[in-house]
Image 1: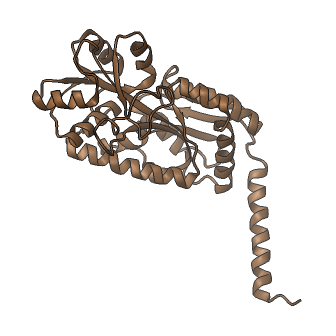
Image 2: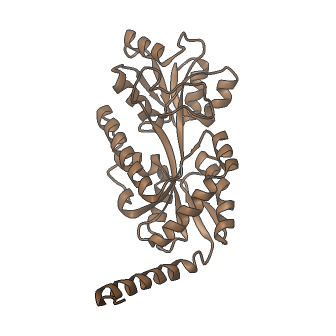
Image 3: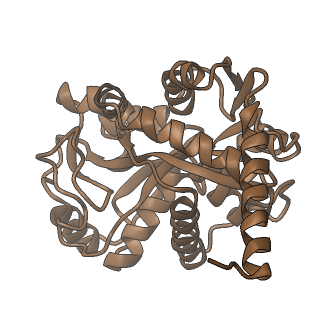
Length: 325
C-alpha cells in the first residue's frame, strides 16, 4: 500500500506534536505549586482552597500551597498571578467578584480578566439566600414584592457594600419585578445580618453559609435561593424563579485560573485532576456543607460560563447605574 508524501509528512508532524506535548507535561509539576487566594484566611475562598489543595497535591506529586494575598478587593493577589511565570506553578482561586464585578465597576484595573488569565475549571457555584426578619408578615418572595409595590422605597435591604454580589442580586430582583426598595450598604455582610436580625433592616440576600445558622435558630426567615435550581443544602426552599420571578438567577462562583500563556497540556492536566477530586462524593458533601455546589467544567465551558455571567452582571450594573469610580 502506497502512502502519499503529503500524508506521510502530516503523520510525522502529528507524532512530533504529541511527543512535544508529552515532553512539556512529563516533568510537571517540578516544584511546589502556589495557589493564590485573594482574601484573608478563614473566608469562603480560603476554606474551599484548603479543602482541595491536599488532594490536588497527592495527585500531582508536589505540594500545593495556599497563598493568601488579600487586599484591594482582591486585586493584589489577582495581579500577582497574572504577572507570574507561565509554567503552571502559580495558580489563582478566582471569584466572580474579583474577576467580573470589580473590573466592570472600576476603570483602573491592573489586569484584563479575559486576556491575562486562562480559565482552567469552574469549581463551585454559591447561591445566595433571601432572608427577612421573622417578625414581618413576609412568607414568600411574592409577599416581599407585593409589599414593596404597595410601599415604594419603604422596605430596606442590607448589603456588603456598593457593587457587592448581594447588592447586584437585589438590583436584579428590583429590575425584574419593577419595585423600589432602599439600599443600606455596610462594610461587610456581618453587620447587615445583625441588623436584619434586630429588625432595623427588613431583608437581604447573602451567600448561604453565614445565614444557615441564623435560619436554623429562627432568627431569620428564609424565603428563597438565588440559583437556577434549588440548593441541595435546603431542598425544600424554592428558587426566586419558582417564586414568581421567572428567569431570575444570580450566583457567586469560584474557579481555578492560571496566567494566560500556560501550555494547554498543563491546563488539561490540571482540569482533569481537579475534575477527579470534585467528583468524589465526600468532597461534594463537604463543599455543600459550606453552601457551595460542585460544578466542574472543561476550560472552554468555563470560559463560556464566564462570558455569559459577565454579560448579565454588566446589564445589572448599567440598569442600576452603579459606579465606584
